Length: 492
Image 1: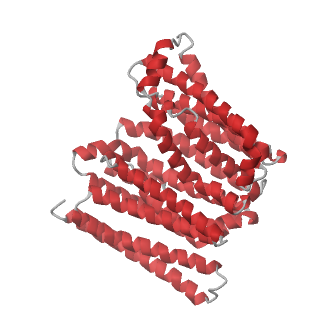
Image 2: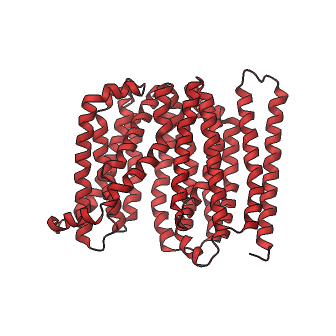
Image 3: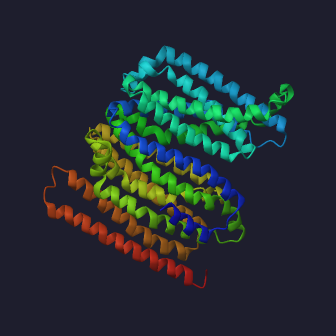
């Protein structure tokens, strides 16, 4: 599937140095994702859903804390023209990593039990002391990664992704007899392995160079003060939006529910990241050129077409047999995760077909619209889980989460096409996406009907699936016809 995507995208975009650089980075990420997914069937037979719930909570908290660990100064490392100022930013980022981790360790000392109680995860109190450790290692890794980006050492970063995933899987599998702490230690060791690999290269490169930073240290702080003041809040908001379910599910339902969701999300994110990165290799680096040529709309539409073609199969596979697939690969204890994956499949489809072109908004200077979209996504995700908790139904929470996320990505697709296309193109695109959205709505109803205690008539369920298939066929036909209209219209 990845070769198909790459071949299609190469026909749309020219090759360039940026695409090759992203390709190197993507290679390591892809390898890491494959290792993580390959290890999952083993891990689900060694650990319980509650253990995965603990890992989900820990990972989410670490992700949130990781946003503030360097106060975002690491993002500025590639920017300065002066090498000495960049070195100062490295030192600043490392200093803040230790300072923020120290402050968090004080908070853990006094409030770990209250936090565990608030998140309905009692075992978190015993392992919360590992959060500051994870923070320091994450801060070091972020800092060294951006230094490597400055030096264009993309292969080094790519290798760390593979090293991290391999180390994490090894510790988590071999240490299963020690209980859930091995899941957390695996993540920490993975971070340490990645940081150590980058640190080795940095030490070798600067072994004969003194890093004099007295003056440039304060210059760097002054020149890049906007990063902690503005970028930190934006990063926190984005991280909160992505990790809200993993924190709210244990707090409002149970750690086991969080574990099911964590596994479903991990497996579903894999095709999103694999395909998304493959598209990103040739999409992101070509935006400026397409804007100059005034044909951005053409490339957005063609990219979306490729993504639709590769997304239907995995989405339909999950919709039709997610629970059975998860039961076979991950064991009966995680069948519920498969049901969650079925309900989340429409969300996966819309994210997979839309997320790679989201940065178009940045390219056309509509960051404010992108920010409003992020705020809306976060708000609706939180509201979905709260409504489900109020109604005492995790099923309703998952359905609403999937429904609202799908709608938001559909709206995002419309916005991108509206901002980059003419009125006629927008009309054609509205007709096509209408059938896709409608078909996924009926497919979601079909999955719910299969598991419902109210709908017992098999003909009704078969009818839902029949309508879904018919709408998908209509969607594909509309996509083909409308693409032909756009291609042959004199205006384009």
